[in-house]
Image (cartoon, rainbow, N blue to C red; front, side, top):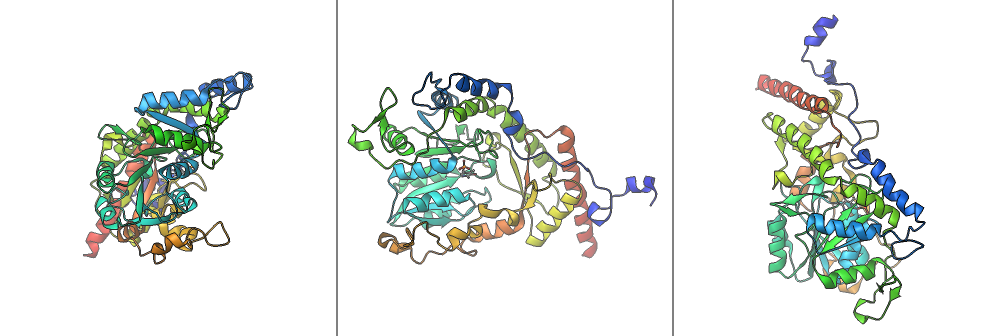
Length: 444
Ligand SMILES: *Cc1c(COP(=O)(O)O)cnc(C)c1O
């Protein structure tokens, strides 16, 4: 074919045509791109003071204290506690609720493995709840699943956006259940003006590398409840409060536990402080790019989009598209990738949800096989958990999760997309969508 003819071709790249683009899209690491002199300045301050521990030191700089205080004033919470990871924060929160053997914690089937790990390590049992087209807990299924052993709900604001947290919170109040809100993937998100993390008794965040802001490792939890806060403080540390000098203080019997060793270091605190000051800008960039793409592709035949309860509160790192069948989904994604809508080797930029690993309950071997860290099978074998002996976690347990995981695809929206990247993505969606639609029409 002559070059001039090739340029005019609408032929799909997957069938030998020219791709829309040939450069990989950037890595999906939102905060990492914005690490600069400010992080360096604050981290160096800790190093220059030779004081990397938050509670005392040669010249402690109070970085974690500042992070907590600024988090509260920025997002409107009463108490914040820096910890060493989102996973730790989940476990500490459930322990602070007093969750343990004999309890079940209701949790969506689209989640992250840490949510289940936290439940199982308290000695409680996970009870799966289906999702709806928000890709978060379906409040109707939540009400159906609540039973005599239900103690808490762990709702997960997945893939950058919040679910129907107002309804979920109302259901929890009605049934006297504790609500834990996992905002690891939705830092800076809002629902009808209320920030992610303010709907539950405790909200948790993660600062791991893939999240909206990062300190490499790190996390934080928020609560409006003084007693829960004090429990979390003791639990995240060595099981006791600290006095004014930062020394362990076992004097208050109400706050004597077994600690989890989850303190945040001043180095992480310094980095997280610099990043949190940028997170509004980072999420606004992702949100703007994502919604430009969403608006532009919404009328492509054969594509539906994830329902976003509050578009203004979406943080934007992920665009989810839904297809009529698993086969249609796979064909569309393969064709998009061939058009150049893909990341660097090994990235998860453009994939079907079937490839999305431990975000789906049935892909988590330790859950499906009821694994234990102990020889005796705890907590599955605990007598108080006998009520849950018949619970199974294989695929087939949650119809909406099963269907949406088969038929949906995911495009990560990097925080540094250029206008050209965005235009290329839109052009590729239309090119593939048009080609498939006209083919279907011809087959009719
Ligand atoms: C990342 C993540 C966590 C865990 O955070 P870590 O800091 O990696 O321990 C928990 N829940 C969700 C939904 C996450 O995406």
